[in-house]
Length: 89
Image (tube, rainbow, N blue to C red; front, side, top):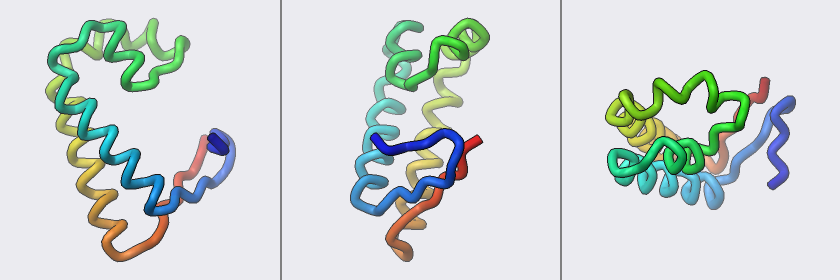
């Protein structure tokens, strides 16, 4: 809830594991989602939806693979560290 798009954000392991679990869950269900569901589950803002509307559905397999790979990489990092830092815009 305290995420700031314009700052560096520390994501502790406890929260990060929940995020990676959500990514895996979405990746597993993405192939069955409508465009609206995919946009909502991927948490795409309205400004991105118009530009990405034609891209999400045809690339669901690639997006799901990316989410799984990102979740794996973060979980691997969390094996050795207690936090991940996300740099905002």
